[in-house]
Length: 100
Image (tube, rainbow, N blue to C red):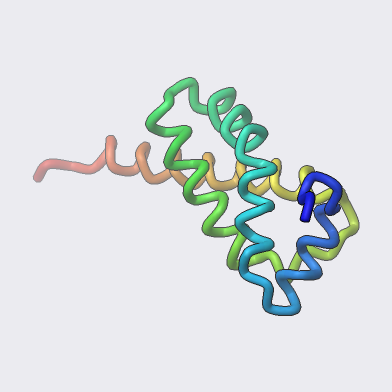
C-alpha cells in the first residue's frame, strides 16, 4: 500500500479504529516539520530532540481528541510549541532553585 496518498485524517480514523501502525505513519510524515519547528524554537539540537519526543508522545495520547477543526499539521505545530514551552519552563525553574 502506498502511504503517501493516505490523508492525515484517514490515518487518524484508522488509529481511532485500533490501527496502531497509523501513528507510525503520522510520525514519519510529520517528523521533519516537528523537528524543524523545535529547532527554530530552541536553537539547540538536544532540546529540540526532547521537544520532538514529547510532542509525539502527547500526540499519541491526544490523537483521539483531535477534532479536525484545523489541519492536523496546525494542531501538531501548536502541540510542538506547547511541549517546548513546558520544557523551557522546567529548565528555568531548575536554574533558579536555591542551594540552601
